[in-house]
Length: 236
Image (tube, rainbow, N blue to C red; front, side, top):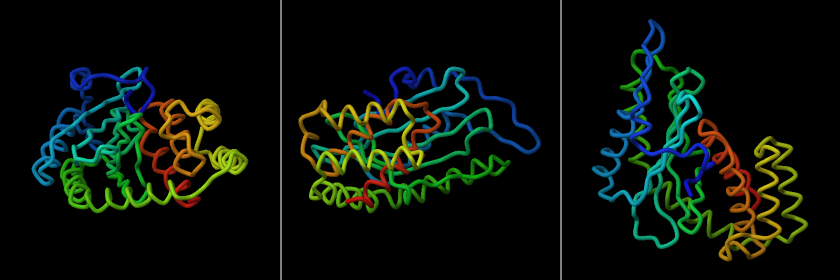
């Protein structure tokens, strides 16, 4: 399990082998491998935590990439994750988010507040990216503690079957789930594949949704997870 659709999952070597396009007068790409190395080194140096797992995804031609690595916080249920996305075809700006990884099912939690984007790939994009990563890593533990508190609130908020169905319908209407993702989410809400999420509460519903969100391209991972997270936290 990789936190996104398995057909997009690749190893680090494959990501590093994607050819970096030529820069133009107005656009400067950041090499996938360089971005990954900087993020991993910065996180481990600043936080003093070891990497427990890492996962990467590419679209078919390698022009969009999502990655995340999870740091070992000693929590048996969740680990601190840092996710990022970018593209080589100008379709996505560099984005970085701090979140959590739910170990039982490899579901990802990224809040909108912790999702930051470098909006332009100008000639200064590498310096902007390094600044952004340093800021996010500096705030990582505080954001992680907030996510844990939000998890506890979702677990404490009952959600009967009918309310869950209604919330999923609203999520679809807001564009938080594609039809395929919604089908997976409804299926997991009806019959959870993991016993840990079988309680009728907002946490169980949220994890049904994150199962659905695994069915999507790497370029949309951070955006969809952040939007869904904020929606269901508000419902708790």
